[in-house]
Length: 150
Image 1 (tube, helix red, strand yellow):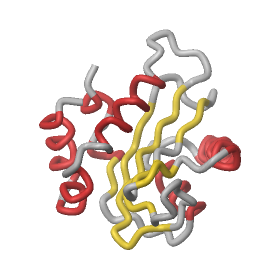
Image 2 (spheres, helix red, strand yellow):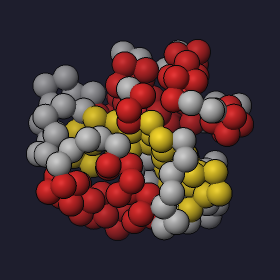
Image 3 (tube, helix red, strand yellow):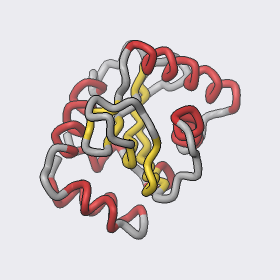
Image 4 (spheres, helix red, strand yellow):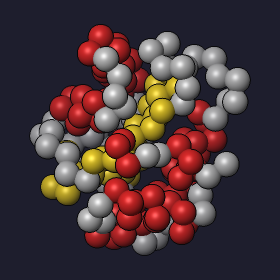
């Protein structure tokens, strides 16, 4: 399993407009292409998850994630906000790179945790932040995932 398989160009936004954690979450959810009611449900689920503890893992990276019945398979999105947003990350640094993961409560393939782990592994690569800063289009993001082999 490679991360590249889960992303498509339509779910990658390199210029997020949101100025707050809530706005960023809503924008990321919008990349999944679900209906308005489902977007509202996902937002509530992600907020509930964030209230348990921030998904800001440090180094400018946040991985908001949840399980919800509004999706029938694992869905992911990536967004970048170069100026950063306070996500209450563990290192107190603003988050600039956002990996959204949403999975159904019961998934036969059980890919939710492996995908979360692979994103965390990818994020820890020493050059990843600099490379994410330099992206100019979604295909470059997909190429970076492929190059890193995660």
